Amino acid sequence: MSHSKVFVPLVIASMGACASVHAQSSLQLYGVVDIAAGSFQYSGAKGSAANARLTKVEGNQMITSFIGLKGTEVLGGGLKAGFVIESFLRPDSGASGRYGSSDPFWSRAANVWVQGGLGQLTLGRQGSLLFVNTLQFNPLGAAFGLSPAIRLTFGGTKVYDKSDSGWSNALTYQTPNLSGFTGAVQVQFGEGASKDERTSYALSARYVSGPFAVGGAWQTMRSAEAPKPSLTAGQAQNFGMLGVSYDAGFAKFFGQYGAFANKGFTSLENNIDTRLYQVGAAVPVTKSGKLLVSYGQSKEEEASGSAPVDVTHSILTLAYDHYLSKRTDVYAAFMLDDKDKANFKKGYTYTVGVRHAF
Image (cartoon, rainbow, N blue to C red):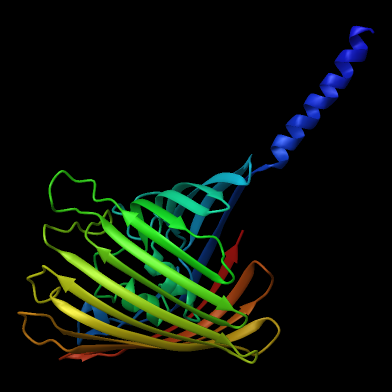
């Protein structure tokens, strides 16, 4: 047999093997850009900068804009692996991050994962279980600008100031879907030689059956990474959140209840316990558009050894979201922000925006 008769089939076979390898791997560039214009005002002390009305172009009202890169590879034997790196951005100014220089560049995600029949293990910076649970059970999702649930827990008006929406130095195990049930355990290592930064823990569980879903998450924060301030020895923040949703066809209804407690804080501002709830609905009004309504309220109460504060903070959001295509939607929203505190005034926000995913 001639060498050419052997060589040609080998080349074809090797090309087929390469194609097979490429077919089982993927690499994707993706992201979302959200930008709006309007008149913005938040609850604050009368005459203060916090309560000032500003007309401006502002990004990240429905979702925090980001750009990401992810890849997967099939390893065989029922296993696959992948990575995710995602960076926040502010499209109104072109700046990176959410908060400026204090926000790490890959602050949305920077992790690798391995998945098999027994579940998925993820290592690196990733979304916290409490944040994921919070966005799943309110009609405005992860809208830091407009969602009462997000603003009262992770947004600029929250009292839970040590917790970020993402955890660094984290390891997460998530179960496979077991007849509608999924669960997860998450650990954030303090990685400090002193006793100030200690390991944080989180748990979550979710059950979905047809139009009904229920879920809960709990975490104890004993360490924090930039852009959040570090904790000191003896300090901890504990937070639990329950959520439920039901899709009735003509509308999807949502409800949430959360409880928050500080430990080891001495300042009046931080030495508080909080209860909060949120109710909302997403109502289809056209084939491409939904009316979104959400009301949330938190109540801060004195913790042991502190003076009474008893501050109630209420947020009401009404929005209409209309999809022009699968990747592009436009929205209009009104938000009432009311913090019941001495000498505080209400804030009223009116905004219109566009969100594009790629």
